[in-house]
Length: 357
Image 1 (cartoon, rainbow, N blue to C red):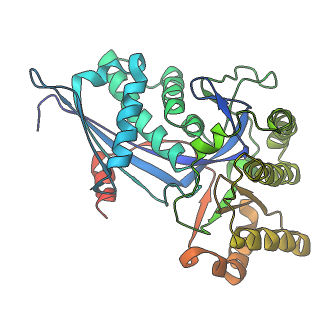
Image 2: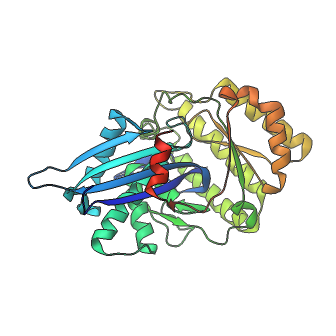
Image 3: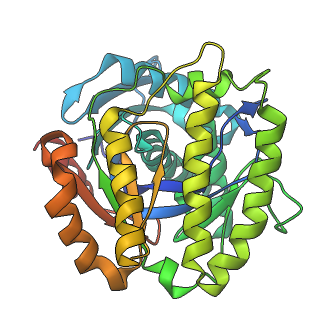
């Protein structure tokens, strides 16, 4: 082991957008503001080992996902590191070894890029902060959010918990297209919100989110979508403060359906939801109406269904899922998650052990 070798390890969660970000411009900037709940059990763990370069040695990268080399991911990570440029100049002095793994399927519509790129940004930002002699403070988090955004737009929101907002809007002071900001004064019902993620399919999406965002350029409903998102945000913020789960749920469901409607009206059009997605959505609505249980669905850019509900109804909702919904899930898989507090610094031994499972 090199005497001056530096090791950093972070666990960063995914997040589920309630008001969705769809469509971007410039250097990974959002067309509309978005708001998300930070998750806890759906996360990426990443270890970065930085070895100082030997004389005449060029910067290099060794990358492993789940303990195995993944050339496609490695290429994306290398391009991302180059893109950081002046935000992380220290990387040019090191050979980087990156080990990473997820607690959930990647590229299937559970915002794996959000957790993956925020975890990587945390490691790189800590390397840079160590070289610069900075400490972990509000400035550090903002710089991480900026770095994460350059890898994946939604990743900038995973830096904070239990909720964050990304996108410049007159509705929220301090908001920016460059980085996300944490939301304060969130009602306890949302700080402990449950999110049961029904894995309808673990397959990689046929159309990536990056391609989907690009199709919003010139989309016939783009302007109406921006107005809709802004109005929903204006309605959602007071609900988050007051604990209004009904308004929260109505917006979550409307935003999910709007997101997929935009995909289905793109040119070319495409569909990511699957028959079992609709089966679960219809049963969720029927269960809520018949039992009065405040359980609401939302979707990311994929077929898997997030069921959102208060902690006080956890036992009833889990029993209903087990009794009625498991046949619609691939291999009966459900991830029972909840609102989280954001990323955690972890020991490198924990992360490396995970990738060798």
